[in-house]
Amino acid sequence: MSVSGLSAARLICELKDWKATNLELQKILYIAHMIYLGNENEPLIIESFEAWDYGPVIPELYQHVKGFGANPVKNVFHSVALPDQNSRESDYLKRTVDALKNAKASHLVGFTHREGSAWSKAYSVGKRGVVISDQSILEEYHGWKEARQK
Image 1 (cartoon, rainbow, N blue to C red):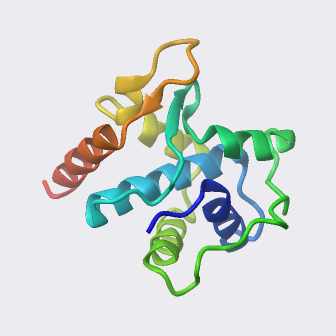
Image 2: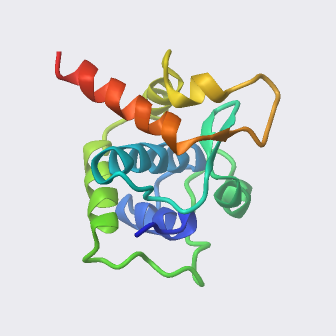
């Protein structure tokens, strides 16, 4: 069962003690979505990611938190329910945050921008609204998993 990007973002921000920036939040969500999709064969996030200049973005989430700029996102999710704490979705989000707890924003951007990533295949300079398909994200997951096993 998929969750909303806002709901997942609220959980990530709480897990990171409200120290995640918009850019970090988008990248962590994308990576969690990719891993969940690869393992569960269904999307983690209901909304689609789009290929923006700085990587994969959920536009609704971006609009919700853009006022923070490069500063950490504060709690602007008061009316947004958290995912069920005992769900697979929450578990994947928690494990992804834990795995990336020491990753710098530049590392997250490097990962999502690497050659052959779903973002790199969908991205076109200056264009917005270009959806990164779950099929392309799934292919990225399998390529990433294969490379990790070498």
